[in-house]
Length: 170
Image (cartoon, rainbow, N blue to C red; front, side, top):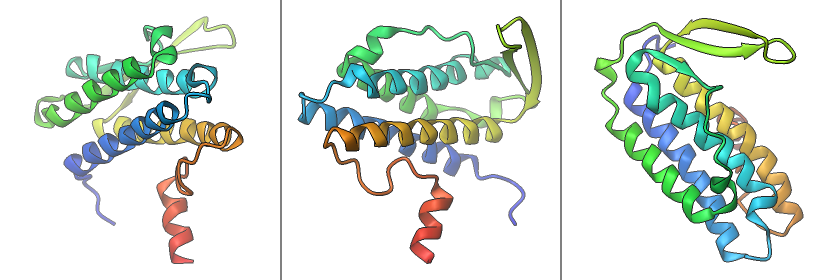
């Protein structure tokens, strides 16, 4: 097992995961009868805002995923969502991984009503893995909805990479 993660590959993987978000937007644009804002838009906004929380704060070696903008215009407007994804992809591609000091402090609200604030330490690689996995999880939910609306995103859309690999090798 390789101990050190190839950060450039991991960044590329995240850019590719975001490409899948663009694929969702394109599918909705091609089938305007399927309401983007009803289901896919909110999931994509959530994904986008997690990535933005990461890219906006990673230089300070801390990330707070809970202080997101919750900009509802992103979930209603496919063009706006597409622009935000493209901006994140550019930021990820330009990320100077050597300049990021580790460990990274990750803050998160806890308690049933958000009354507690927790901080845990992480790494750049771990947070990139989280973001990709989180997006794929939401893509699985998008896939179910899109299928029910007659939109095809492909058989592997919304599946974890390990699941795709396992199915291909079975």
